[in-house]
Length: 438
Image (cartoon, rainbow, N blue to C red; front, side):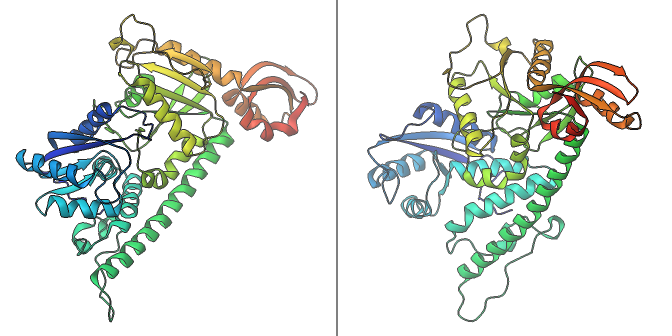
């Protein structure tokens, strides 16, 4: 992977910069967004030693925050012995170049996107996760290439052990090192997209197999650190890694759970969302996020006790809209209720439609039975009641119906087994040939 120059071996001293543009309508206040940036910096292994804010009529085309403010930030960062300055928004390549000139060679300039990409690189433990993060990093890096980005064979993690292409090739006549670097990164991006397309096809085949088996798929979504992994551990009893940290787990986990009715469901944890999530990450994680779009039910897990829980709900809903998630049944899970007390739940805008809402504590186990009931009820409410006549020689179909549908009644007749079932809409077409009465 490309190196974004964050030294994770020791805590680099870091100065944060946030800007508020009058015409913008951010989800979080400037102070809250900077506080979140500080948590991201801590997750990346950085030590925050100061911060500065700026209120703007409009973004400065050269230094983002204005030349005068940039000088103030430089002086404050030097006084705090800061080695890194991180901006709370994504900087354009031009902004980054100009700010690097203002701050000088001794201070690195990063933005929120680069910071999140670095965190993802640290937490991607599977081959698929590493590929997705590497692609996002290279696509972020390409328009920002300057003469400083040379010798990519030293910086990239895509060596022989990880399927990389090795170092930069030899220059042709008249080529600059910058042109060679750009061409090499272009080749790496092409290779990574091809590998991820194979991953995407592999995931699609798995989804088709699950669909044929009639096993409903439930996908966990939520803001980072809302407790999705803890909830998955509480539901399955498996020893799943959890930590009170942003993006503690990145690679998706899939487990099977049994509902009270005897039906099996597949439940999958996905990457946590966050405000201002880099667009390169959303694009690179397309194969993973397709699990969300193909789900039978979404469990939106929220941190009830977080002061910005309503804004976090909106951030997740915005991301779901950005990836064109179709209308899918949703259950809103108010997690960490043990930290909330007896107060009424936060009032959220009534515009979003959730089938059900449940309060739980994944940490203590409170509300788990109510959540399982909500899953069962929500899945059942999106079933179609039909009568099917299954020939006796198709015992495999009868077995599949008991696994994937709610069988209300069965009767043995001369032509076969007459069954009244509640069938998932996704499976209706498959069993349509056996339908005798709708």
